[in-house]
Image (cartoon, rainbow, N blue to C red; front, top):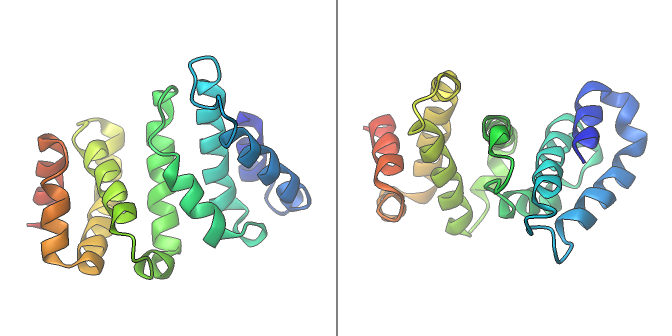
Length: 172
């Protein structure tokens, strides 16, 4: 699974002719009944990362409107947590590229999930998280604008306290 993401990222247009088959394999892996089992968890997390990379690096070959909700529904990673920074980076990139798609969603749970991931990233106090702070701030402010202040405050009240505090600090 990991190789699919690497190829989609590194081979650019040269990978496009394989994108459809690769998407099929990744989606099949993600929808397998035992995908989240301990035995298959790392492969599933690699499939999640690969799908995110395909959405970013092979966007012209991917049905974003179908695959983006699937990808987000698989987050956060559950086994290969060493990849959290890469997944968060992809998520923020996808948000900035497809803000109109996110804005059109009536499902506030999807936006709440994004805020939870951003808050968790920021509260980790790592150098990697610090390198994403500007993009996290821009994304959080945009989500707050989409949701409205009451829904935004409601979502913050459901998050872990450190995560909510990190988001409040970003938004004032």
